[in-house]
Length: 490
Image (cartoon, rainbow, N blue to C red):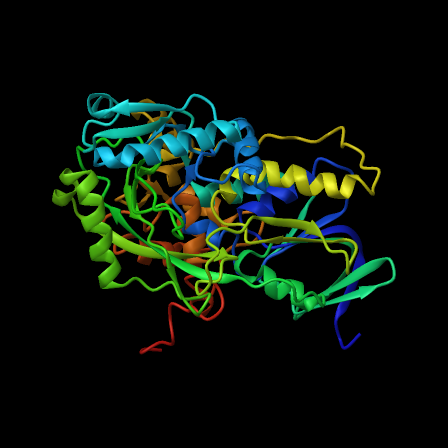
């Protein structure tokens, strides 16, 4: 077969290692199935899932009766328990959507009514005094208060989902881009550059590239339009306590929800995202024009932000189904088994609130399969993931105990985030074989602090070499991102 190695038949192959693909993989791992996830990048969460606000949405920003609304609200009722099981950092913070003028109150009432029709619980309209009781730093005349909104670490959530699926028997293969899909009698053949796999079901959860994966199977019905969202992130070493996400009144028919201000579980504050159509799905540039716009709009809601330092900008690209040249401003999630390729389930245009909706989307996908398969629960399924020890979060007594038991806990690698050598080694020994600088960053927070890796990068490189990784093989994020290009001395 052209030199490709053919594996045994899988029951389900999931294509795409973002938050939705990994939630589906974990849900499938509940059952007695042979399952595989293929991800083209060198780590999970390398696409949309690493560059979003990490907000658990309550469900009032999506149209009544849409699949987005159904999945959003159903996901809201599932995600907090899931996060607890996986030991993923999160907080139920609440959220305010702020009207700076009385004239915008009507729009808040519309959002409240829409949310209530969707099943979003406990929404209220609050006045200026109440706004400042919820969030003292915020300007505004009126606000919609959502008590069940929350925040989480999106990439840690994605990794935790995959690790839970792995401990329940799932297989994950990184650096495995799908280059061909052949539809045969009773099964599919899925090809990567190095291997070929047979499967009875395919779940196409390839995010920005889901339309292209569908085309590999001969389905040309879908087109993804990439929209770039740029962010700014503050230094977390401030005395500013942002309690909850603060959003402006969203523009009607716009491509996004407006520039919002969001606390993170790690203590930083995010400004963004913007929403701009770009031609290139890989265009994650940060632009001076948008950075200035982020600040201007955020400062209207929260003037005190003017005194803060911003330590980094970044951007993500979301997969929209709305043609920027057309008049239609909303298109729903597509989650369907192809009538042309039975056994192929396509997930197209899964953008916000996809993260919140992911547990419900996973159940929806598994139910499609269950209508045609007699799925059997695993009696030994373990829904929990062990809690990671974070040196930065330990008290002095616990730190001393860790160092006494293992001296590597006393070897500080990242001063900004208080990450030790023991944590870096644990990250390098992950079950998926991730050996990149960004992979360590997402698992430990090395390089995310004020100096942005200026202190810890040489230490991490040294540790990686000690662990047997040749210098020329050390990369930022996998192929085409080498850190070193040769030696100037022998």
